[in-house]
Image (cartoon, rainbow, N blue to C red):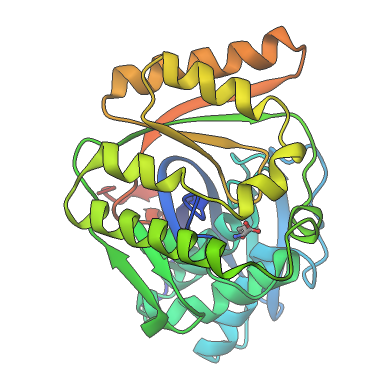
Length: 320
Ligand code: HSE
């Protein structure tokens, strides 16, 4: 079935979950990017509007992550015509919240919806990875949770290497994004190339504790295990302004643990009530306010379902 227009939402993500470097991630209920697509006669995807990026994102279809993902979906469907894309960015760029992945996922899901959803979610994965690859490499630690939702274990880029883990009840997140640039390439360049056997055992032990806590729905245990990162955070800490202060303030305000979100600079605190998450978000922002560093604070929870079709032919589709 061919629709006239389709609109999709794809959530922001928190990759790594501290100790789970490059292998764990979760989807946030908000914020997320929205993509609206319509048919056009010319083949391929073209951007007609980008809102919310401050003019920073490329409109070139070969460089724009949403266009690249849309083109892979069109190719997969064997469609000769094209789509016009409007991208509404609600995620800050290069902030450790999976901005490029959210745009790619929203575009892939929207184009699929335009054609009556012939492809399953797993079948959209390669298109999302294509889009993400243009900006931050061929990896699924943001694309996986944004597309499938929940907490995901990502051990590769094939569908059978991405597993949805149980999402414990009573987990709430406070996030703060300071206005400092931490390019992912730089945040990866500072990482050690080799680790000692001692550190390897400590890190794998912490990941195992985290998985155990997730399966037992033990939110305090989960938060404690996330923080037991003896390799990645120590190497990156100097790139995240006020990390120690924000962690201390978050704890005082009731957070159970705090980690760097993705490659940073966003920080993510785990809480056990919505009220605490709100209080923690405000407290974390105050640290940056005092240091005269601009920041945005949010509180939210985990999005179970991942990306959602919002509208078909301008009619709302119920959001789960
Ligand atoms: N896992 C990546 C990193 C960021 O920490 O470098 C998310 O793609």
